[in-house]
Length: 373
Image 1 (cartoon, rainbow, N blue to C red):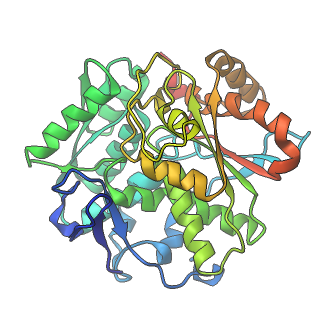
Image 2: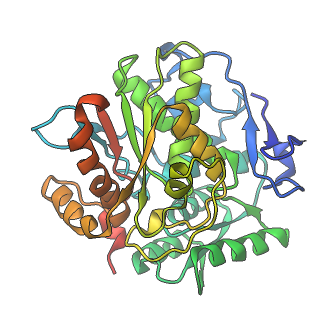
């Protein structure tokens, strides 16, 4: 299927095979890819991975190199949080080869890079995306450099290097890390396989929506609860459900409720102020390192997605993270602090508004073992 990059700022178009990662004007790139048809009959049920939805992905139908990349990612279970309330569901997206939902985007991005003949990739990450890109790049035989901020869990760094990638630990903030990776990408010796900049990553995370569609059909849950830092899962869900709704596979869009960490919440601040753009904030510190993004590059798109689904954005109190992590563990779900922050922020909101929310799905995005020191 043909797809082109289009700048979100000036509208200029680019061929993805040029391996560009942002517009000359500095704008972010989206993928202009119009899916013309999709139904449950187009799901390849013989394939036990997210590639069962490849009819909805921007690849040539004859392309089969994804078979050299896949590790069986996707198809995670959706189960009740406990036996008390059947309307409060969790999707076990940490049950992935690299133990986080980022495998969705990494598998598709690396498959596209393989299709384009890429030999080396570079990326910046607070841990999970780096692990995922390192794993799938290793699987595809690509050289890989991952830039991580100091303070990243040593276990995440160990996983990155175990996959054969080189880990570069950058002093300073998460934004300093992104700047170092951008500088490396601009030198031209590697392709920037960014989970923030590269539009193909979002084509992978949109399979979260397609899985829920397969699991629930038209009777999808009314509310999606999604942690948001850079917005990779939130925007993927927005794109996926938007496609399904536009093509008539669904009769409605689920509401998106985003969760940000109390110590780093630039999108929540902009949402409350009625702004259409996001201004950088100071990260005052949070255990939820996966969403501690002081300046999300796709902030305007995230705000638009929340508002178009008549959604909301709420804060996760820092003091609630540890109790939420312990509560989930007692229910058999051992997750990292970022996932626990999502639950800590949403549960009080759910208790106060449950009659208006219908069935809710919370993603359990990362495994707890990776976050231990």
